[in-house]
Image (cartoon, rainbow, N blue to C red; front, side, top):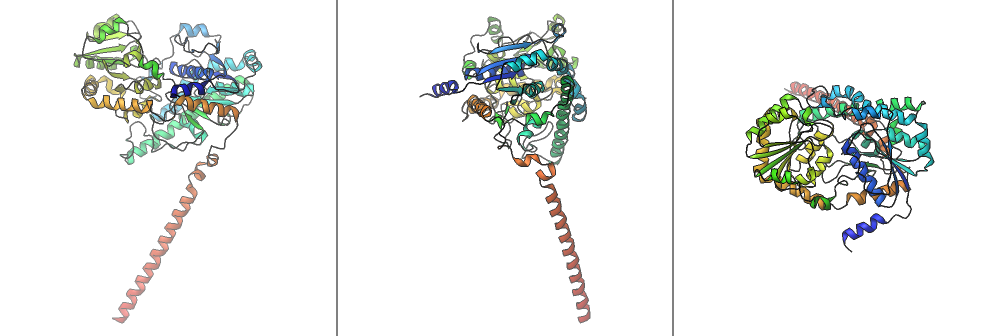
Length: 532
């Protein structure tokens, strides 16, 4: 029996279908897409799935993401939804070139209100809506799945009195991984500005510690901020978020062990990275629209530029735009397709003729086309996965969040480069990087090698996810796979008290040995003088 037939049999084989509620906050497209894909997979597996979608942003491109017709979708439109429709989707423009928000110390104190504040209004309304809560409770769900980037779903599960399986649509969010027993990834994953092992030096390790500590503080504060307004909305004391999240036997994360850094982990952390990629569909993306065919025929090499949906190109600082224009002018024999989300006749006049500005691009189809030689991307996880699963050389220009990690993660495989966003203002630096990537076949070879690895990985992410989901539903409170040492403080966890004690004993023994040796030597010299 062929593998695909076996997979189909496995996917359809569910002895006891469960009623599953999935919390899908409409905030960022990549997060929504990931959760919708999981919903489809779970429904295809035979479970009854309801998708609850409260709107934090009026995203207009989420319709149609869910493919399975048996999934019930409950869209929750807050009372201020008309304001969301009129307002432009939150894009965090300040992340483009703000040195403040990029500073780990300042970010630790700015992020709670910036990110948490984006969830607050809708989240509080949902939790205060007793009619909605009662309706969900009456549906008798067996289990709920909720992304931990926005904690409202975890508390809805608490109010409904059902187990909650936490998940994260990004590669890693250390504060949650730690709840499931994963040791610190210090030394395993370099921080921005640091060299990775084995080339790590003292200042790299110092930078790792500095960023690790303040990133942890930022994550703690963002979650504490949410915890406080959630408690205010519910109207009485509720369990702390950590105590609710860690009740689950598993934590679903969008990491892939063959793509991400190798980090010590536990069985409770389930890696499903790549699950959103339809490999067969990506091989057969169909014919490009004629306008793009015409563009791709213009030059021998074409470069695609897109900074995603949360960060928009037209909001880019003027000195960055000027730098990019210099890049285009420096490479007249290369065609550029730039996802530029606003009609701007005046700006169009500023760019050279080898540049095509498009409000929307068929990204998967373009990445699958060999005539597109390089992809310049912000490094959101959706784009990162598309780069990896198309074997396309890429230049990552991380703007904020997990994008820096994604950039370094891909660069370590050899088919991508990590590029400092502040160097965008210097057009020659990006032009040199593009020219190197187009002319040096190494990048294409390494990118294709990674693609082959991902296609050949021993455990399919979909099978891994479904098996652990059924396991978690059957054993909703099992925590035996989480190390018990995880319950102790940092001193006991790393035996710091014992190490200090042994160091003290060693110092004392060395001191006594020196004193004894000194007396022996002194006595020997004294006897020698008497003999003389």
